[in-house]
Amino acid sequence: LLARNLGIPVNSLQAALDVAFNGPERAIDIGLATFDDGQERVFVVMAGVGLDADIMALTNDNLKKKVGSFAYVISGVRAVFHRGFKATLTVDGTRQQKRHSRMILACNCGSVMGNIGLATHAAPDDGVLEALLMRPRGITGWTVVLLDLATRHRKGNSAMLQWPGK
Image (cartoon, rainbow, N blue to C red; front, side, top):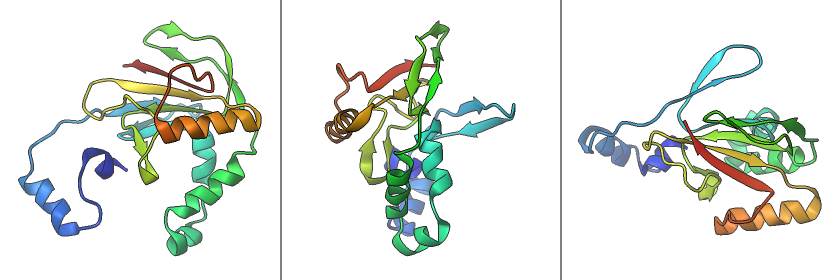
């Protein structure tokens, strides 16, 4: 995911090595997440709770070897039926209202597999992360989220909220 977000070729080792050794130097942001267990974890793409974590936990490694990234789609369909959680998000000292959530992400990069744009303003080298809170309700809410992801449109969508912050 990081290579794709940086524009590094992923289908050719030679092309990727050419970028690595002959391309321009580029500093990227690094995020630091502390979860309930108290351990700090470093991330360069994104860190999340809820749906994102459920998808990762439900993805079968053997299935991933057979069908590749499609294994995440299968896990996503299963995870969509999990219940959400209540969360209060604070970004740069500004506390947001408590909301029912399905997923919260801290994003340093905007795109995930299939070039799906989750955090539309995230850039790996701008010194800012994008906090993304997804809160669809019912079939209508999920339809709005899917349309939003397909069009990368965020204005007025209460099912996907996004804030920039350090």
